[in-house]
Image (cartoon, rainbow over all chains, first blue to last red; front, side):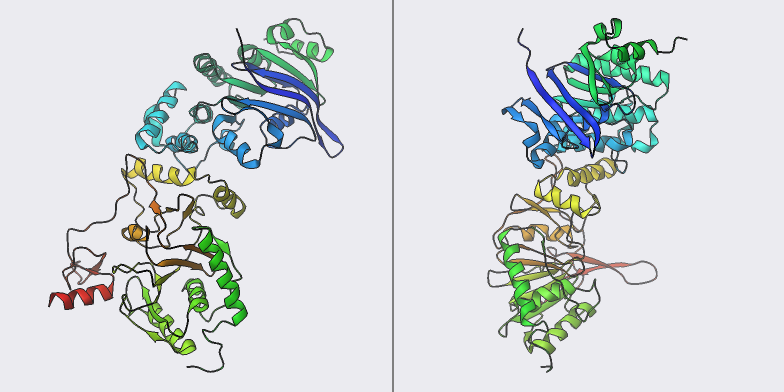
Length: 258
Length: 278
């Protein structure tokens, strides 16, 4: 089977002044793969995600992306317009705080529609039906399509954010602590939802989290970060069951056993 | 003519600067060009932008018409007309067909404009995206990259809440398949007149210091959805003065019981129509 490589990262490095953000990161991302990035607070996970999603431009390194149309491109040298276009349709970020990813002044349906309007979809009933479809898909009540995000609970807002991103059928989804700040039962439900959708639509994802339960449940491959560098990488099962690096060993052994 | 002022009030250097901006605006239909707006002897919000554009293009041969909400005899229109009479000593008229230059607030005359005419709009807010995106830095990017989803989201919201788009004035248009443009607070009834208009359309915003333009014969499309096409207002009534059924009607409450009358908002059109029907 020939699986397509859609992202190739080489020696990605970012400094904040003299401070290391992340350093010498290398990995390949294949279509349909879910990559987890774990590490403690301040280990450079979020910096890495920001570099990958174009939010900041790294000090050094290379990111090659291969799009459905247009072949392999050097992501970092893309003009701002193309980066924005990517983020608005073919890629998507699910933020930890749903309020960063949603427009609170417009309804749930409007939020999903915005994503589709970015790709010039100008048919109202189509927008409406797609909105409802994705709300149901993420186990929300599609009758609430005209309500505003603020009338939803935190977990529902997160579901809405996920439907918004997935509605444009993106190639890569970046998730930054998608279940952070939610209580355990809601976390579990949302992870369940993500997992079943991912199986359905074969989306490629990069998930940043400090929660080992999340990576074990969702991801195929894992990068373990500490102090800005990747200390261990491999298949998720292998890394978690047979950790080689002392930090990974510490990490896996510090899960609370109740 | 009042002495002590340059012709048309503004000094020649300022007029030249504004003309240069107008040329740029005409070259990029719908694009908002910043310009060095001057203080005018008029409060912001009363047409300082329109007056500056008019002042910099008016010539001794021009015949000026000024309307406010379609009417020639309202305070704003009369004052601006008197202003130009004093500082230019030019002819003014109420007749749309006779005018070579028309300054307007909130209406386009019912009489079709021709290629020898210029219409200048007074613009309160040149940025159609302003209420959707408060940051100027961001709205400029949205225009530059043609990212106009926000505007359609607004229309989506209105349809989902009210069943149809309820915006009836300053209804956003797309100019020349490129820039989304604020047509100024004209009723959407007037939007179709902007499409392929023979006359040059200039827009001046004094407070915001922006000039934009729609050249003659330019495509101007009101935004809509495929399955919710753009529609203009209609009335069951006709004008109670001239009997017109084709013009934009103002609703007038005429007594304490709330009895309503409808009359043409375009006073010149109403008069000519009345004369024609006599």
